[in-house]
Structure formats: C-alpha cells, structure tokens
Length: 69
Image 1 (cartoon, rainbow, N blue to C red):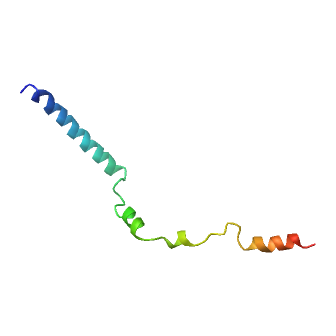
Image 2 (tube, rainbow, N blue to C red):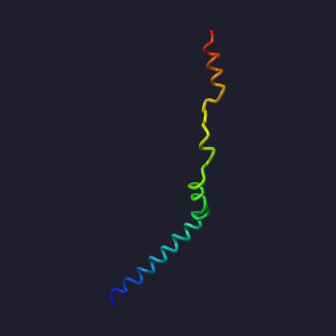
Image 3 (spheres, helix red, strand yellow):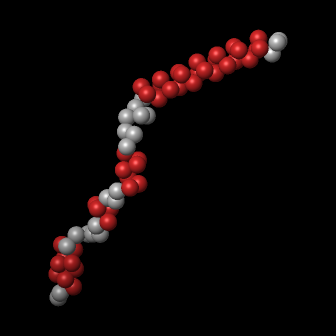
C-alpha cells in the first residue's frame, strides 16, 4: 500500500510527460505528411533513373575543337 503513494504520482508525471511530447510533436509538424514515406517506398521516381550528364553535350564539341591543330 505504501508503494502506491510513490507509483501514482510517478505514473501521473509519466502520463503528463507523454501528452506534452505528443502535443510538441503535433505542433512541430511531425504528423503533417503521413503518406509521404509510404509513397516513396511503393512508387519509383523516374527522375532518379534518368542518366545525368554533369558536363553536358557541349563538352564533346569543346574537346574536339581543343584537339584540332
């Protein structure tokens, strides 16, 4: 019975802390995009699959001009 005098306030403090963390998370936008991660897993991005040429097509013509005497 004496342990209840300790456990009840500890549990109330724990519950209040959990509610405060939940309210903080909601206010900081943690639950704004619930479907974004699920969509990223299921659907591929076509932009990521396209080969990217960092030098562009102009670099080939510049190399040829540079090599000619």
